Image (cartoon, rainbow, N blue to C red):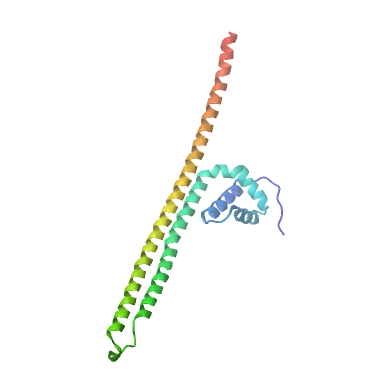
Length: 193
């Protein structure tokens, strides 16, 4: 039975919430899963955890969130070459098998004719070309994947720069407004003298 608490959040509970959410972000999981985990640990509802995160805690951990997202991206990129190398091995094995199938294994000297040798060499040459084509396709696919990653990274950086620019403009506007308010009382005080 889960108890529903309605008391205030302690600093320790806030730290647990932040720690679990950041871990889930790093691991590529969802924040909802993090809220459920924290809810079970703290005997609170996942909705309460989500509300607390979004209303009070998230703002304090923005730099940690961006770092966790970068770590998640690095972990994803580190896993991709392994998957590509396994795929490459499978393709190489398939090509090797097709070449071996084209080779005459059970030919005896009396069966060996010039026509059979020419046929074998033509099949071997054709397989050699297909190996080159497969290698070229693999190279082009990997270059394409790298370019796609670069474009995505650049788009992400562009979004971050745009968000930073908007934040900077907002800060400048607030500073200008504050300086305007600071100057008003002085002007009023001078005009009354």
